[in-house]
Length: 461
Image 1 (tube, helix red, strand yellow):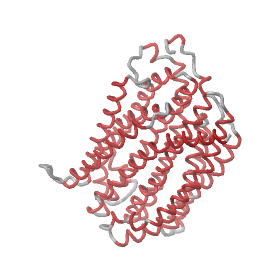
Image 2 (tube, rainbow, N blue to C red):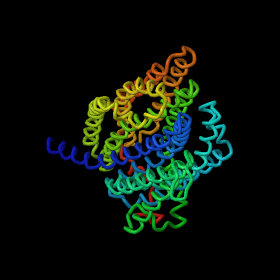
Image 3 (tube, rainbow, N blue to C red):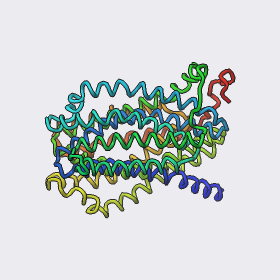
Image 4 (tube, rainbow, N blue to C red):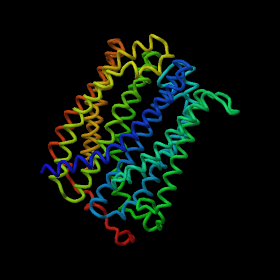
């Protein structure tokens, strides 16, 4: 038993560290956007933070689609049915495009109203609207990247996404510095420069991953798909039944995070700026464990595809126990480096920094329960296709408990930002209780590949 556990640990670390590193770099990129416009004042920071939060809503909905690709990829890989993943990718890209197009059109038509939901400051509204006009269409590139990355992770191939993601991130940072501050014949563009840097870097990222997969003729890269394969009704139904609860669940959660941001913005511009600073810092902690949750999903999914249910449960239980413990230890490390963490933000107003320091400790330790919930949901339950229950848990915790209590704390009791943020964690506590119950019920221990529609008539083998 011990050698098996050691082998599983090695597999987990081998899968987790590239995904975690890439996720950390992506989070640091979001921080760099805010840091690099920090010298422009609270309004610039709030504009970028609010614009990113609006994009985040759409991005997370689309990541639900990509996560479904990852679940199928891992189980097909475990079942030895790797030829089925390529048609799934094409269908997923079509679904993603259909979701994104109306969102982009709405952004161009009503961008000022969308940003205005989170603030009454006209400067932030104007700047945030311009930022969204440039960055929202670039989510089309992100769809391509996420779908292929999740498909590769299902094959336990995590280093290529990490390398390409790292290159794209460093390109973005370099372009940020150039376009925000100007130089080499380009005038300083400020917040607009950060937006164009993001657009260009995302486009290059998508081109790089397509080029690498096409050149290597990878199994996940679609080379051809005849019309009979594309229009095969049962395959569409199978895919949509899997991904729609994930997209709805992710969407409900991301809209809820935006509602929290709206609450902070309505309290005041300073509060919005503080939470715009805190979001990437909290994301940095969570990103460290995103790779472990992804590794858990891959390992559990592959075992489920092999009908090795006892082994899948053993792996899942180990991840669920260890994730919050390690998060707590990392939180202690972050707290000891508090002065270093806030060093890039010295240009902000002293009052803003003072409030941010007070929130930092709360968010640092509150992340422990968020990491557990992420591991239980994304790494365990969804690996077995238990998406509808995850959706119900997300909706219940956020919209029935968390958001109503936060609204009451902010606008009925008029509590300070610290106490308002503390109340938001009522959502996470509620969800953790329900996730534990669902995990222990073990209904998620299912092999999804046996439910795959027959592909004999389509020529897919």
